[in-house]
Length: 244
Image (cartoon, rainbow, N blue to C red; front, side, top):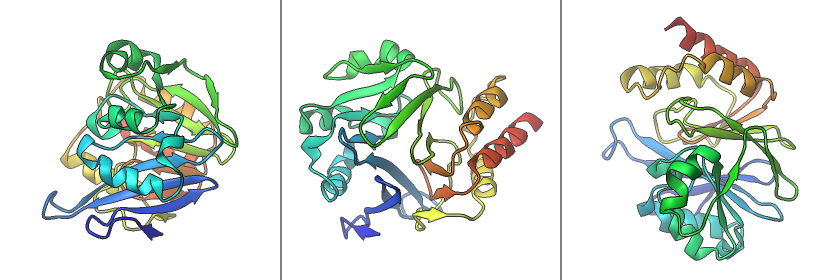
């Protein structure tokens, strides 16, 4: 793990081949119990950043990206849904990377992104593949999972990495870049205190679609990346939601 900003503790760690987690820990003095914001950089022929981080974190995240590859070489700025930690610094990234384009689901582009973005989005249909070189990303529409009509996820087929956004949000500062330990119980305890799920009636169907991709890496936006049988873990989450 490489720390790119000693003051904030922002750090970079390769979590799968050519996929880097950028992590900024938030201390308990700011958020009780501590928290973390992660972005994922796919260093490919057409580099892609998944999640931008909030606008005020742009200097930290861009510094971290720059430790891996030139910021101006980014070609795709992707995200799961329209929210500050997902795309708050979108226009800052577009200014820094002149060839970059927003990438999101069609609903997100229609209702928000093409209005607020300085460049029009490349909107992906459900099950559409975006090939960026050594990485191939398949888009899955996942409305209201856990929230947002426009929500969707990307599955990187060559490394079997699911860029799973707010699923399995963990408290704490995400000190372990990758873990094989339990993230379901910590994320469920966090959800119990601060319920951010929409409780969609289609959650089980959507989670099963994600599980069937057979992910071996779950790239969470908050907390540690998880390594293991991702399909089984996604089905375990589905069972917890179904009980409710």
